Image (tube, rainbow, N blue to C red; front, side):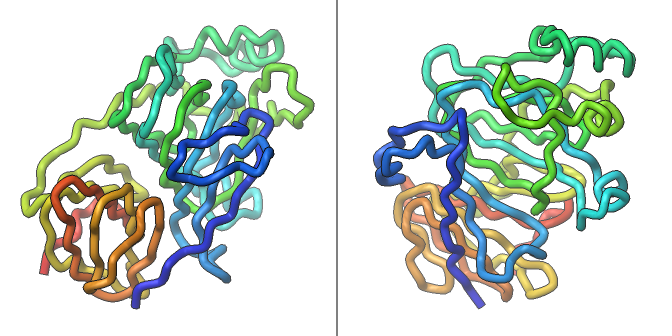
Length: 274
């Protein structure tokens, strides 16, 4: 079974009024995100988004599964990013430059110095990162990126550049892992035109280029298919550019030269080709 996911466009104070052409018009809104979900898909394990930034996002953190379920949520929020477009000087922050105590972390959030304590990194199209729950992070301005995440709408803000939005200092400090500072992911070839783009304990993202094969999927272990342009097919059906699908049965994939397809699924174990 192959299902195309519906688009849900979300305005954000840091979003854009002009989008890359392939995403169509923003209709004058400051469009920040496009979510891809199916009806009744709130319990799906993963969520796929595009983000469009004209300003820095808040300094934030997401809780892990244990902290999230204790707070009444279904799961925590690991996430991964693939940079698609970046203006000159665009950057993201992921992790801290050095370990901080809880008291110092709270104080730096209150006075705004937390921004300078983050590990800011220049980024370019093609860069990929896996950000485990607990990692302090902030996405900079001038970026178009794809995000794959655990399907949880739970964010604790440390600092928001004076925007009139709620902060969550107690929860953020409790959720923060001040030890971690994840690096860029190094893409690893897997053969048959597929490669490992990012991998973490909660999910894996592969990139498929100019190749194909039958990938294992089921209702209990689905695969999210993310078309990034060009001619790609799943079970003989062409996947339009910038569309997202979910496969709940074994799927035959074919990616023509010059096209790109991402495949995301739960867990860190690489799915075998059948």
